[in-house]
Length: 155
Length: 155
Image (cartoon, rainbow over all chains, first blue to last red; front, side, top):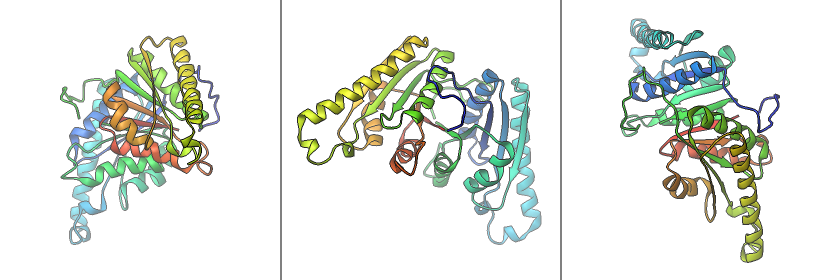
């Protein structure tokens, strides 16, 4: 709860929106992106777009290979840049990208990305294929639980 | 994920918004209400307002006293009606209220209220005093996890 007036007659709009991108679940991410951009345009808000390199995306051996890590990092940058370009083409003026790594996705977002971007809303996709990837739903739910700001899980 | 087109160039707006009211946490509820009404007005959406009588709001002995149950139920109706009146005064045309009971709040909302109102977005407050009431945060987080539609926890 922030310190602004909380009179129920006041509108509540978000001005700094952070979208979390899951490069392995583009359907869910696309839907979350649509909501984030729609809100950013209506509210003339700043948009942050973050993707986190998941520790378990790399096998134990791969993670010891700098070239493999670089390759994965480059792929993340490319996806984030692609979403930035789409958001700008859609009319969002203030867009920033973040690529983070080394740790649990939800912890990195809470401890590293939130303090840097200072969002008032986090927008997450929900896994569209829970049988294949059980932990993505858990990340959005973990953010709903842990983040100090509002969180929406878009389904 | 619904069956509509998910092209990232399409806006995503919610048209049936369900607000969960916690009568014992009016600060959190007020902030969630402000977001729900702001969205409903911008999107010309339908607004549902639900409050659930929590099983543990009544002691074992009280729960055996029909007069006590009626009193609690009346109080919930009054709070929901109050929010309905505010929403209508704020310009939301289509507003419906629900008071439910008998069970866990998150299960009642998922199994009973969602099928009746058919929301595409659920708006929950977050507990503003977690030391006093640890389980409200859990309800919004449980909804983020279990609900088949989008869920926002407003902080």
